[in-house]
Image (tube, rainbow, N blue to C red; front, side):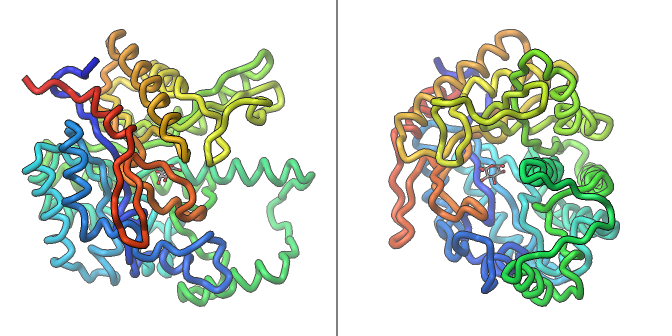
Length: 422
Ligand code: BGC
């Protein structure tokens, strides 16, 4: 059954993962080191920078009406304080094309990648970044703000804390507990990699490298919230009508007896403690891929025999409904599902995932939860960060040797829910 009129249904991408040649970004630096820990560099990606019209056409032809994509800070401000009007003109074209196709653009202003210069200046651990980020947001909105309604300032503001938890868990499993001031001997290869990275960013000590996608501390987590609040204020000062929010990576916690306290603590870390700031936003971007089972000693591995995705996550589309319900208990604004999906080479599993996930969304809406949109991750098979191109999340396959696109049946499956127009 189709969504009713006004619902926003479509797919999402992020600039660095699809555009190609994001040469002034921190990721470009990290991918191209001799000792890079990336499976491969992003290179031309899906050449979406030049092929965005074709890609947006696929959305339109499937009957979809929303496209979430990001504007790349490293293109707009390739050097500190130097803004590039040609790149603004490029994104104006993308936005105009969406509008001409009847597609609502949902714009993310920062999706993991940052300008290389920002890392040299201290990155996401430096107070000045709050000002740099809001200056960039203001610049974009002054020029492009009248072509959009929805803005996500940042993607997955809780990613840093999640990465820190993962690291803590790995070390715990290895029997290591880190104490402040403790020194660890790094393997030679790893040390060489860190020194190479420091030289490439122009910082003296590798410990001073703080990209957005790195382990957060309580302090850097707060800094990201300050950056969001400052950006929101800057955007609203230009155009108070713009709807501003952030996106969060959220798990559904299935709690076994005895795991309640741990689960509550995790939910606080993942979501609740952000509420004083994001509670003032116009909407929240919910991003969910799977569930986590929590026992008395914490997070448990994927159950034996359960189906998993290429990422190793449990195949569990019902997690989305549970997360939406949980968020709605304490968040009173509008809910936008800005990412949900899976990586698989078997598109029939994606088709089923979409049907089951959307059934859950509809059930939430039937209960009065104000979900305003759903953008599947991702429109295209694209650059999955450290994992490179092997993980395929897309509704459309991309042959990167020719850049030829091939829509998968899942694109039509999503399109079968296209909101009615009359
Ligand atoms: C990120 C995307 C990423 C996706 C799949 C989300 O956390 O926003 O950039 O590709 O998950 O792993």
